[in-house]
Image 1 (tube, rainbow, N blue to C red):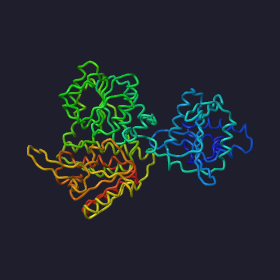
Image 2: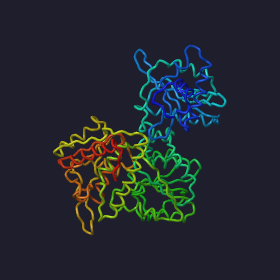
Image 3: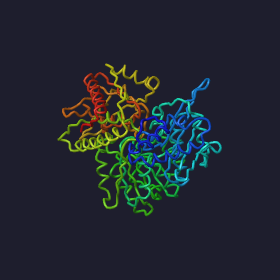
Image 4: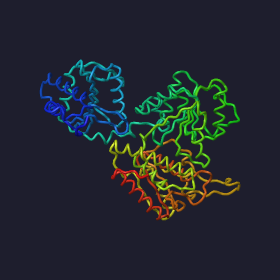
Length: 555
């Protein structure tokens, strides 16, 4: 429904009665249901008119990026002697009688969103209204934390609206944020185990498609923040509930969350580092389903080994979840292409589009930071990456327009002329900025082009913390991230970010991409003794802000 943000319900119906042609056809069902609702309230006027009790309603409010619409939503502040409390009233309109469980499911989901938003409500009122039978429902507290859907009278609705008729509206956008609603199984495994999470419509559709897929090999791609891991573990949970044997192979450092999830949900987890293709795992022999998370980091030999498990007779399906851009080592960058060649007649691809959890500005800044619009004609793989970035920018821009996302100050750039000052600053960020410092994976001796050499660190040793690197933190997310960049970083003639010296067999630019895409709300870049880089990053930030303002995404 297309109206101004806050409106009076009686006013809308009086406008509709005066000139219905002002309302587009696509909203007429909602308008006529609203008209019926107002008429039912008119019948039970006790103290004041319907006009006086239907002020400050949001109509057709939609959660940013979650595709969840609230037909009628009132959010008000109640001032008491020593406190301020927030109240929400939600009324869902139905043209015809919906099934009771459908109404209950919708209101239950909305209750979840309100609770996850982080507001301490005094009261939360959730109603449904069916136009054809003039029926009102309330999703009401039964006992403790249990709720139930019950039939109520129009007097009940009138009573609540009258009670809060004079309360001031508060800006619901300030608290209804995606990062408050969605969870990561790796960051919030306790909440996941308790089922305190919801999937978006897009994620739910993907989950259902994966559960009914009939191919042996399933590939699921998606960008950072799209919710791939959440979907993966939700599919696992559903399969375990059907008494299937499930093995999950996370291709990043095994953290406590994996073992806790495995223990609580009852599946087996095998870390990629311990997956030896020469070993016969009893868990894999028994497995009905195998899931590989961050599969762009698995080796060809390990892939072949997993495929051989189909010969054991129990294995029904292997799922590979990955992001083509999140490779770290040079040998990993071709794995995503190799995965697409496996079992072409018995495989299927799914893509989880968009980024529901990540900050749009940070995501776009990261793309502009790492890759320019110009292609390196001498590097076919870089051409492929740039094309992928271009496609993601275009998709991202559609979201920017759809959700009216505005530029923010979510990217901050700091300059220090020496490593010591930078190290001191970064050591204080957890307390002073509430930010998580992430560093580059330390380098070590290795082999390059058949010769034993010592790889340099992308950052001076004294600013590197081996316990906080992209290999250990792949798949995890933080509200704020701080990362250092020193004189080894620069831009080549084509405008692409490069590092002057070799760094182990992990690509430092890819490590940087992995680090910056861990940030949900804020990204802090600490530039060390590199004024040219500082000026370039400030320019990239300004250009990114211009893309938002002008409505253009350059390729």
